[in-house]
Length: 287
Image (cartoon, rainbow, N blue to C red; front, top):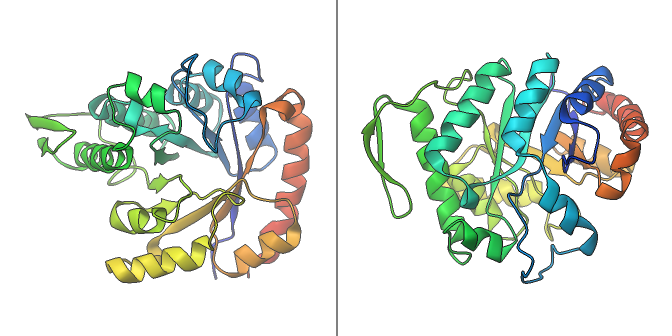
């Protein structure tokens, strides 16, 4: 019997929304499976606009809680739901500190962490952290590999272009053997190959990826010699149309994460009620 699909939500946790612990309790009480927090360190006043830019999300992106700190608060008041970074911007994080923070969160949560990563979309913010925007995906890959090494090796050393440290001890190791699963959250046609190269799964946004994520990731896994059946695909920005969800479930999608935009976060409990009802109806779709 196949594993039933999981359902969750992702939002921008700010000081003007429902608090992260209150939100986490509400998600768990409604029998949802996952809670993801986006992250962003800051928004430069002057920044280049691109396809992700919307004026209504600039203030929330500047006001977000640190995602790992907020998820730790959520871990303290829940027992079951998985807690994910959606996504952790590795261009803006030191890998040694991030490895320890995520490993600590995995212990504090009882092994419930999902580690979503990406490079970020605000060029100037990335550059403020000393990372090259043009090289952001090379940086993400190398820092992801370094973090995994820190989780799995003892002692550990890493020598690369962007990360370089000699033999070291780093504890705690994550509670999940080998560390939390690492999923890439991005939507270009280059992502399937990146997932097959160094990740455990993919979190594409439904209306931003031009192809079919399941078909394209399967092809990339074949090319890379990876087993597609060992991958996880969580569809972010999942639609609420049952027929679309049923099609993805039938074709092997592992879960769905509904994005709650800032405009609806003031009515969060009502939104969660709606999504919980939909999720309950859909759980029986995979036999």
